Amino acid sequence: MAARTRILIVDDERYVRDSLLELLGMEGYACLAAGSLPEALEHARSFSPAVVLTDLSMPTGSGIELLAALRQAGSLVPVVLMTGVGTVRDAVAAIQGGAYDFLQKPVDAQQLRLVLRRAVEHQELVREVRSLREGARLGAGRELVGSSTAMAAVRALVESVAQSDATVLVTGESGTGKELVAEQVHLRSARARKPLVRVNCAAIPSTLFESEFFGHRRGAFSGAVADRAGRFAEAEGGTIVLDEIGTLPSEMQAKLLRVLENGEYQVVGESRTRVSDARVIALTNEALAERVHKGEFRSDLYYRLNVFPIAMPPLRAHREDIPEIAAALLGSTHAGASALGPGAAEVLASHDWPGNVRELRNVLERATIVGGRGPLDARVLRAVVEPAIAGTAPTLGGGADAFHLRQNLDALEKQLLQRALEKCEGRKKDASALLGIDARNMGYYLRKHGLSDLPPRA
Image (cartoon, rainbow, N blue to C red):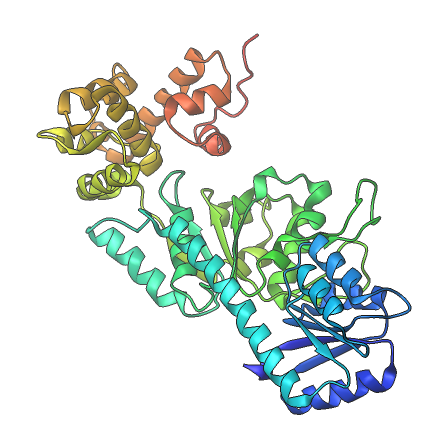
């Protein structure tokens, strides 16, 4: 444990710092020393210690002030205070202020070893509890459900890549469960006890990209009134999920590439370079290879992301899983219908689900509201599903293309988009809600069918 554990030593007296550096270095700890409060705060940001061992009284500020500053910055690192004039009052004030423990100078080496060991174990327990809570939140009712060959292949890929640190690129249509694949890779990895941080790339303005991803220092730019940790720092030791990676503008792609190549990044307002220890999982519903060919996405970034690809199949490609998926979705709602009634599975299997599992979930939710508790009646389901597809069947020709599945599905998908846009008078957000797809992914479907230039009606 100690061989990889970082300790930050803070004391204004050089001989104390040197003595502690030598002692803890012999114990196998990785140590860094600071002689003042400002220097300690600087090291705490860049060094990311597991424990801070600090003097109580220093000319530049007290250990209590250092503790308060760390807590204000959002750090929960255990702080052990030392003093040469230890009193019960000092100890009580330190513990009440949030210190982990209190040591009196001259520090007994055996007592120091014990306190540090306990502080590190305490921090690990805190992280484990957080991880278990997060895992319970993520994992409840969120398994990769389906007995089909397609879903078995996805689960096999998840299991095989989870124990490595390889970058994963999850592709698939909107609503297929790409986020769930990322969660399962994280939860089955050695990083499961560390944070899982999600970033929606489409929601980050290019002017705030570096601040959002890498963090900033107070005063680095107008409006930076306090230090802020970036998403890569938040995901340290864990996993960062980059959703809608295909939406990143070219200048942001170049900055992300540097992190993927060597792990290096810079906090805005800092001159030093930091190294990230976060696994990257990227998600996209766009054909990145085609965008690379068109010059819209950097080829070097694409190859860095595409180390281990996992393609999520659309729901229509594994219809045999629909009853099992529907049962799992109904079981996770804890309200309304509890199972599929007679004939309900056949109704669900007759739909093409352009919005995939997300659309299925929305349909089931609406049906449970209408049908109430008990098995979900086929009649209720039909009343919910059929209005969405009634009168939209494409007119088929008489040639060989009349039975071409992919062409007819694409034609139906385009008609659904057109009808939804007409009904919503060109309002794309409203149309996406009507279609049961995520509004963030509406642009993908519009570009796919050449409808992206349709203006909203007045």
